[in-house]
Length: 117
Image 1 (tube, rainbow, N blue to C red):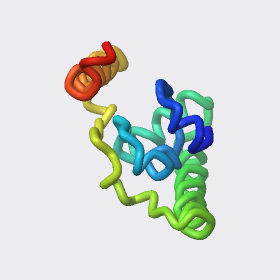
Image 2 (tube, rainbow, N blue to C red):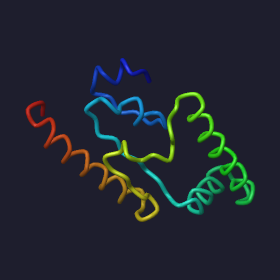
Image 3 (tube, rainbow, N blue to C red):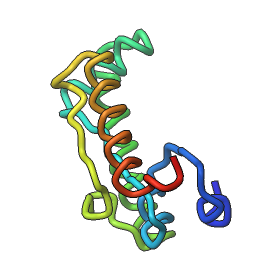
Image 4 (cartoon, rainbow, N blue to C red):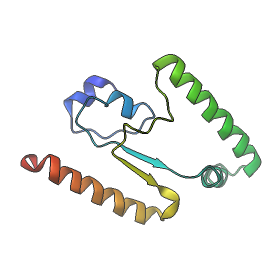
């Protein structure tokens, strides 16, 4: 996803770079997260791997991502100040998370883009 595509509008995308690329663009940036233990269990279940293996791989991947994004792009992945909404997905089931996100996006669109709807 390029910055040019973001500027054209009417786009949804999922990327660690998203909030940084869209920081100067009118947009609704959502950060979905879960505690490390929850993420590890989800990964282990999804990939049918032992939790310890998923733990080691996840910790290594996240450390490398943090270093790479800082080195190559100058972005601090721990900086969540670019986001408009942060949602801990461990608090709700999938349907609950979807309801919250649909509601939040609906309110955002109604407030910011009422004349376009």
